[in-house]
Amino acid sequence: MTGRSLAGQLLVAAPSLAEGPFARSVVVLLDHDEDGALGVIVNRPTEVDVADVLPDWQPLATGPGVVFQGGPVALDSALALAAVPGTEEPPGLRRVVGGLGLVDLDAEPALLAPRLGRLRVFAGYAGWSPGQLEEEVASGAWYVVAAEPGDVFSDAPAGLWRRVLRRQPGDLALLSTYPEDPSLN
Image (tube, rainbow, N blue to C red; front, side, top):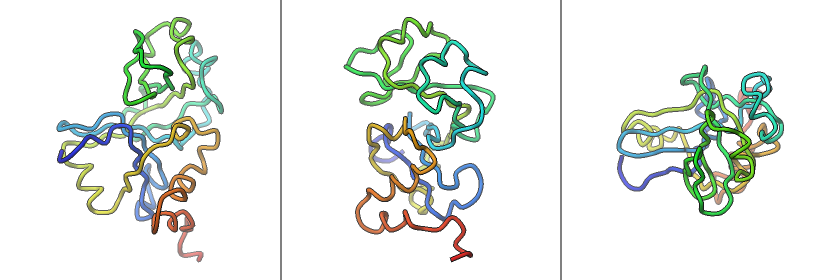
């Protein structure tokens, strides 16, 4: 890793990532250090209700109340992110950056509920080995942009890729109009 940690930042897939799990994805980075990087895709809701896999957490899940596909790695595992007001780090939660925390899904939901804001559950994650993410960013596969408070818990995740790009300065804002299939243009 060179430079500062990108934890808490968004990775927005470039239009060149047109196929596969990262096509038009928005990833929030949870960890980024000399060991590599880890994040979750925040704009891929599935059809699976949180109640079907983690029924005790369903009452805390932010709408649409479904599990999101967090990435192509370990799709049989789950992790949850929550908005955490204040500066306290209650047991069962690891603050990632600012008001964003990683929830221990083995913790008792009723004990954490009063200390959490919004909550989203993800199946799997995205991971990069040391230096891999930096190479992908340098090659133009990803745009690194600041996250806004509502991005991770967006009520309209399907349009997040366009919205995040649209609010960027210069040429990045223009990419928000890039067609999904350029051959139809």
